[in-house]
Length: 106
Image (cartoon, rainbow, N blue to C red):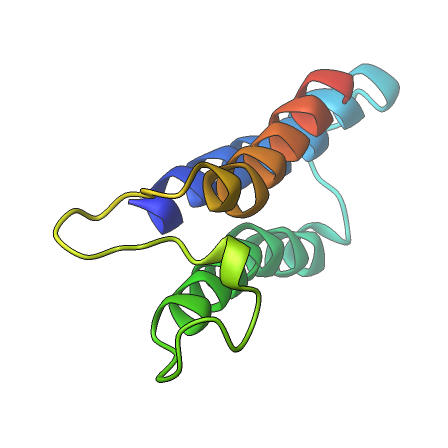
């Protein structure tokens, strides 16, 4: 669930900038760097949420509880969502809020 939501927010952020931001500045359909931009934006939109999800999983699956950032342990046990409010803020709300704010600014 974390990866899906974060991917949706970052995809929205990466789609808004090249589509609407450049259309108001340059009114042209074709561009020479479209393929390269697509790859860069796609990598950002998929790899940033994957890295945050991997970080959450790493913190959760540690063998010794409390060895790495004990206050950020998400406590994914029976549900696929955060049970710890501090980890919810640090590992989901801040990245999602940053993507939404960047989407709003661009």
